[in-house]
Length: 74
Image (cartoon, rainbow, N blue to C red; front, side, top):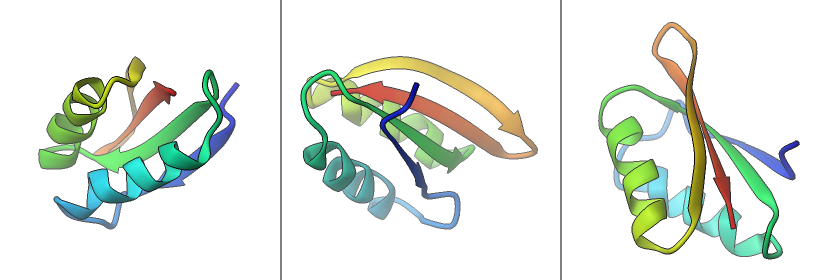
């Protein structure tokens, strides 16, 4: 169960990961952030950048249309 949901489907890189990182910084260790984002650059960059920052990417799922959900654990 996600601790917080962040919708960045209207955002563009690099703001997609900036906003994701800000939300992750507010979470306690072990808490989960679900990020709704669009396919393309955000879908490529947010999971990769989260892993590089030491977060655990639990899943990447297609929601509908061009929207995906990335589940990240702090």
